[in-house]
Length: 234
Image 1 (cartoon, rainbow, N blue to C red):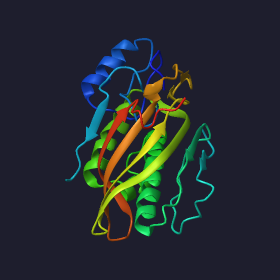
Image 2: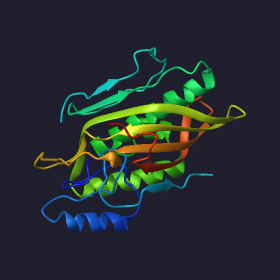
Image 3: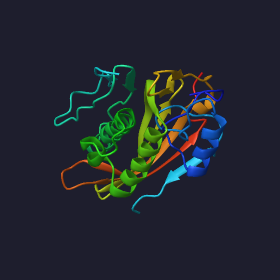
Image 4: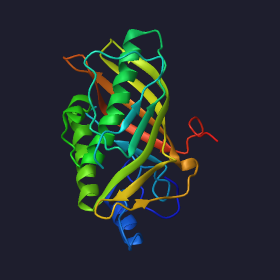
């Protein structure tokens, strides 16, 4: 989501002060829900944000990497038909790293589902987010819903990489997000809050994840940076 006009949504970056500022500035209509995760938000706000961790009917479209085989026990995402997701993730050749990156992609889609449905306590959010990260996003989802805004558009994830694995139980990883065609949308009117694309629609996301007893990798800490040079594309 570009920096001019409209309402940036989801990455819900940060603070309630930012949300209040955006909402007032949007005076005619909808509020901004701070920025970053689901709707590109490049106007205002800090370039770096962090979540402190423990340490319209129909189904949307999810396009995985062509090389990624169907996963056993893969989650189902209840996305509206006006949301599309493209995941560009290639196998690393390492089973642990592949599992970490697979679950990070699932977590990204779970967050989109939460904002799209206005429900932060979905099966998928509980599965892929540790309690601290889950509570953080629950607050953001509730705030956005209260303001009468949801999300729409196309979300693309690429540049997946595991940067560290410790004892097969915790890991650090990253990916890039492209939100140039992702927007906010007024729930009542259905009006799409379009903005002008910019470099800030490319977001570097970094994570700390931990393996659960059931074998899933949950996000326990998350941070992001807009317009990071390693993610920006023409």
